[in-house]
Structure formats: C-alpha cells, structure tokens
Amino acid sequence: MKFTYMLAGYEGSCHDARMLDEAIAYHGFPIPPPGKFYLADAGYANKEGFLSPFRRETYHLPEYRRRRGGLGNRKEVFNYTHSSLRNCIERTFGVWKARFKILKAMNSYPMDKQKMIPVACAVVHNFIRMVQVGDPLIDDFVGNGVAVGRSDDVNDDYVLDEGIDDTGPSTGTDQHGSMNQLRERMADAMWQRYQSYPWYRAT
Image 1 (tube, rainbow, N blue to C red):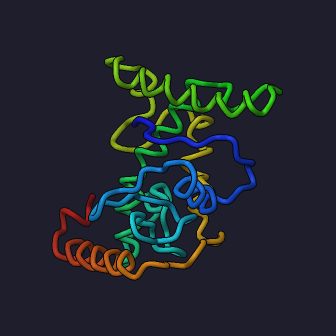
Image 2: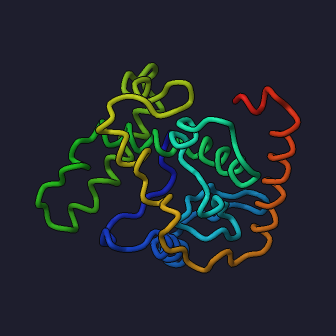
C-alpha cells in the first residue's frame, strides 16, 4: 500500500491511457522487466507489461458479492481474481484521501503549487506506511482483504472507479498479441481450477 510512481500536473480531462503513454515516453515511468506486468484497469490497453481485465464483463468485487450462483464463465473468474488483487490499489487511495483532506477540496493555489501537493502527500503517506506500526487509518480500511471504513472515503475509488467503466474508451484495442494470449491462458487455467475444486468456488 505504497506509491511507486506519481505524475501530477495534467488536466483532469486527460485520458488515463494518454497519461500512461506520456509518462513512459517523457517522464521515466518504470517499465516492468520481461515476464512481469502491472495490473491495469479497463481504461488501458492489454499490452506488453500491462494486464487489463476483460471488457464488458462484471468486474467490481461488490457486484460479484451481490450475486448468487457463483461465477458464470472463464472471463468472470479472471476478472474476479484481477479485481481481488487490484483491491489493494483502491484501499491505498482510500487511505490516502482520508488522511489528506486537501486532496478532496484543493484550495485555489497557483497550478505550479497545486501539482506538488499530491506528490508531497504521496511521499508522506509512504513514509508513514514504512515507519508506523499499527496505523489505525490503515486498519480502518483493511478487513478481510477488501476496502472497509468510512464510505465517503472509499466510494470515489473503490465502488465508482470510472477507470473500470467497461463502456468507456480504450486505446489501441489489445495491441500486443502476447498479452492477449497470456490473459487467455490464465483465464482458461483459472476456469478449470474453479470448476474442479469446490473449495475454490466458495472463495
């Protein structure tokens, strides 16, 4: 639950995929080594180094938990697993916004000052995370592996994360076949395991 990279200063209307492309091209974004990848939401293409979920399939954990009858197909099993892992990201943003209220109500500072505030808050958050044992705010947002705590601090990023809106745009639909093939193989293996082990279906 620590930040590893942050780029601030772009307008809020800038699409996530464009931000990523520019961060890689101009701002030193750390590319994962071969065989490794980031878990990315559906706002990003499924391409080398970035594994995104299947679009137009159920994704959010609360949506799955409201349903009965288990998971319906291999893509749902993959998306459920993907979402379970990405939940750490949502919880991190929930803690970050709860700790630094200025992030939700920024004062009218000049833009060159405004863009430094999120970065400073991320640095302080990381420092607290590394040195403070038993942080009550962290504990408040972590329970059974899901986001908990005050709903006003979680809803923005966990329940209503616009990045997972499957009806939204996606740049370069699945540009890299290797990541598509990896996602398909993972989905097949997860589906086979899901069908074979009753205890797995219950998790």
